[in-house]
Length: 256
Ligand SMILES: Nc1ncnc2c1ncn2[C@@H]1O[C@H](COP(=O)(O)OP(=O)(O)O)[C@@H](O)[C@H]1O
Ligand SMILES: CC(C)(COP(=O)(O)O)[C@@H](O)C(=O)NCCC(=O)O
Ligand SMILES: [K+]
Image 1 (cartoon, helix red, strand yellow):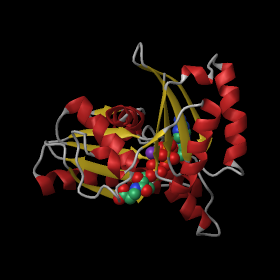
Image 2 (cartoon, protein in one colour):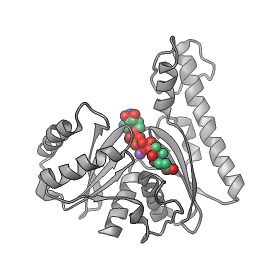
Image 3 (spheres, rainbow, N blue to C red):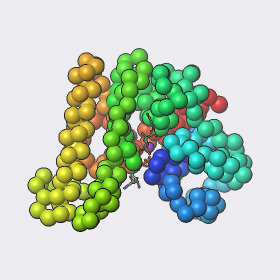
Image 4 (tube, helix red, strand yellow):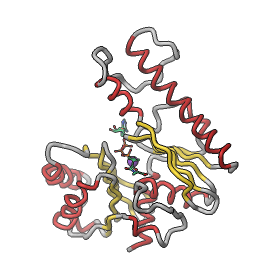
């Protein structure tokens, strides 16, 4: 079995891929910044393995994508000592053998490269990957697999959190699309502004990317919050919460 570890700014996702029947069988999430990551790893991972009848011997290969560098040594050490496997950490050196290319390998997030690799594997054509994570990102590849660039805005939860923490009277609200765009109370006002505002943002970004490049794109949604904007379904050709994990696996296999 293959273990994918995707370290984002909010969550560390652990996912197991069964190489025999080619399915993702198990997922679980840890907070990226818990009190003590080492303690959580030592407690939660073994418990999860135990509950699902898994043991370290079941894990044949491990790949890690991380956009939170200080977590890396902790995870690498954990994989070696608890799982007995040296994990492959995706880096700027991981891209040379891939069908997708970037001119700024040292800067672009490894998660975004995983996303476009999985998109390419799926469609082999120009694509825009929209990732609804801590940040909301648009990663654009052309029809030769070249990354044309990335656009980044605060993610949905990040926007709501920053609005609440920057004001005296605005609460944190549930990420729920209200019926009306005109808020009738403070909670609805924030939900209307953020959720309808972000829907418009996503549509405008996709439109702009299309008109600026003149390309015809597949548009793929991913990320923990990709199902919040239910009114955007027609905008996406595909929605795949496992996109980053799929790319992470392909990139690890291409390099190990
Ligand atoms: N199934 C889910 N339901 C609700 N919220 C989720 C779910 N999965 C993830 N989230 C939340 O969505 C946000 C973005 O998650 P994720 O895409 O994993 O972000 P990142 O990659 O930046 O860590 C996080 O705040 C996370 O807690
Ligand atoms: C843009 C990101 C913060 C997204 O991270 P996430 O929302 O998944 O936690 C991450 O991909 C990153 O740190 N990228 C480096 C900058 C770049 O891609 O240009
Ligand atoms: K992510």
